[in-house]
Length: 338
Image (cartoon, rainbow, N blue to C red):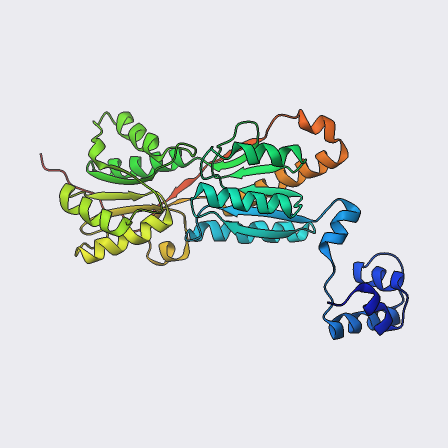
């Protein structure tokens, strides 16, 4: 592997000049910049980030651990986070935990060993407190995204309880009562089930808990949806994530149900297939989620660097972002029999 000395020798300049040219720091003539640039390409030179980190104490790397590889909405937010970090001079180191606590532990250990400047992660549970505290003791700020599992740490979550309330309320107002909810089985994220129940209670309609299905990414959602559709004959469905929603739409088609003629449907997350099929959606502001997460984490990093002792005593910043309902053509009024 080429070193900075090899680049300097190839370009015919001093090591100091080559270093300044590569880092774009200090004065370097245009002629020497060109020589160094050509040498870097010719030798396929890559800066030694570990050495740089040891010298400066900063890696300019932000570790990101996401819980679900298959959730396209997460990937949309990640893209925005990466763009925001890049503008601030940071790169993103990305891992997926696949809703598995042991994989999450491995990924967080990797982030610690990689000397990242900060971590954004979606907690799988609240059982990895030991590594979380270890990361904190090393002065690495942590931000929880979508879920708040560890009190005392920064977080940005979407108010999914309100999202489910808005979806269910809309369906009730359209005359529906037999509404299937495919929620998320998690004790550390806002409860879609609570939002569903709130809408029924507000309308003075009794909740039938048989219609509340709490799922994880490990469930076969398509087959589960088929089973519940056959057994309960719902007039409407609320899908708590876009991944659940895709499988439920597939299940409806395989059961011969047309949306909205035979069954009404609302899904969380305005991903491409949702808007393309004109499906009503609980919309979550991508830019707001990403920018809030980046701003809070970078401010925490800067505060920690400036005054590490006082930053330990600062209270956490916890933001709850409100979703909204976008009504399209997947909901049809249901005329109840008298």
